[in-house]
Length: 329
Ligand SMILES: [Zn+2]
Ligand SMILES: [Zn+2]
Image 1 (cartoon, rainbow, N blue to C red):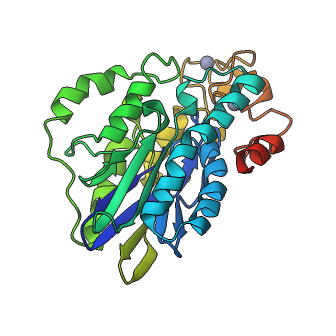
Image 2 (image 1 turned 90 degrees about the vertical axis):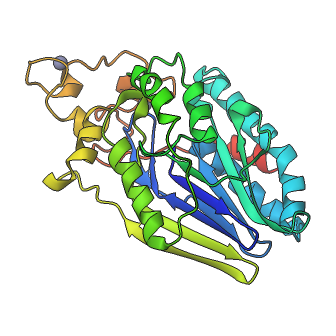
């Protein structure tokens, strides 16, 4: 998941993303840039959910951009390839980890932004694996995650629908309860200044980072804002979110980590009973399937005791090399 803000008009397009990146169970938290800016077309490719999909899609999008002299051409070349690339991923997870293609772990999304000569304006097209990568013409400005004063977008609702029935998404009742009222809120409108982009991102983070079951949606790291005009592309970091787990003023982020399998949580007192023992030594079942969705035993996967990882700096593992090669043929 990620923070995405996209607003397009006749003369310009603006794209905002955060840099926080994490596994489903937060056992691994790191940062990455979520905008691939292909300046020669130009087109901006924005990551949404399922990072491994983008590890495959970004190199391919880069190749396709070399064959395209306009955003319209890029779109024509790119659209038929999204689904086959996602298929590579679902095949790999099915074969290696026994994960069903419909599992929400595999939900991927992407937004392509550029100037359409055909429509004589900037365009943003969104695609979600759960909707078969059918083009969603993002005429209205998009912002995910919505703070509680903003109506959740089609992207956000599609992602939540994908997690329906997933036992790993704890407390999604809260999301279902909030939704009717939430849908009555105002639509996101294009921010008029950099400060307004920062404001909407910070409000989203304040509302969503603190645990609320199916409502939780982490935002963090840095905030990048890119502006496309017919004259060129400008991109810069406009804000850095506070997320130092050792800083008491950053309590919201810390509490969020503690409700997941982040190493900090595993090494903290168990929140599920009064034993006073560390969570990893107490109520976490070493033999249960790991909550990250990779299909391994917890003890062999995201546990701080797992032999393949250090106790404090876990990394998301890339797909097997043969998966990458097949995707770029
Ligand atoms: Zn316990
Ligand atoms: Zn795991």
